[in-house]
Image (cartoon, rainbow, N blue to C red):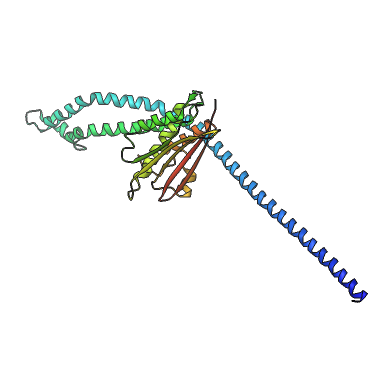
Length: 316
């Protein structure tokens, strides 16, 4: 081989090595850029999630303040309306008796014609008999309306109540068993499956967490009642890891679409029929969990059911 060919081959090898080295550097740099881009996307998504959490927290706090004011404004007139309705019920027998007497007098031929004419004129709008029949039912309906308003006000106050500390060391497994017994009559038409493990005591408000569990169980039961194609089933689980106590409530009910799932913690949002729900139950749950520095996670599939997990830090 000539010296010229040897020089050419050496030059070609140097160029090939340089090209391979450059391609390796380019590939490594491209990989680093890709990994950095993925990491950046993850951080952007995390920041967006944190922003949404902060916005929701601020929104709930504002709504809580408004709810407290509305509740107190409603409570005062509600108290005397309720009291007056009770007084009217005390007059009920006398009023019904007078209406029956007036009806009889209006039909009598023995009373003064002018008085009889007045009785007849009074009945042109509504007969004494009809009023006597309806007065009790009207009073009962009014009482039911007042009861519903009082329930809404109570929920508003629970949602926005002053954060008074009533915490003590509590065994949440025992709290869960107690709430389950309390809800026995409400859950009589569903199969209840429990997995309640022994967990360490933690410092919390037992009444608040008990209310959380009860609200979740009753919501699960209501979701099952709307699904008639299979046996209704509600699950309650309690477990713990090194740092948290986990409370899970699941059902095989109607489930939720994504829009409903993202709105369930908003006050007054409900998918139930009018008169069957105030839309405050899950808002109260959210408030209690946030107060305990906990996390609530919701998974749901339309037509398949819902699973909700509450994670509470263990505090000694």
